[in-house]
Image (cartoon, rainbow, N blue to C red; front, side, top):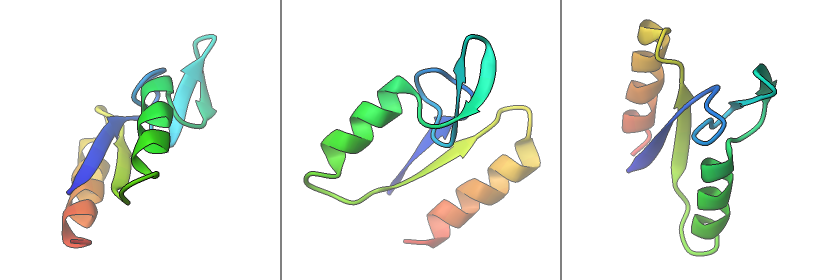
Length: 68
């Protein structure tokens, strides 16, 4: 079980978000709230992918699957 977010999204970025149309390190608003709520009760892995980096996204998703 895990969560896949879309990096650079201002809401769903896991590692990278967007502020003032600039790519910056950090979580999007939704992912940040979700992580804080979940960490009170469960531990769940999250991975951020970029839709234009398909090969890397597939590798990261496979890594997420293999950790379980």
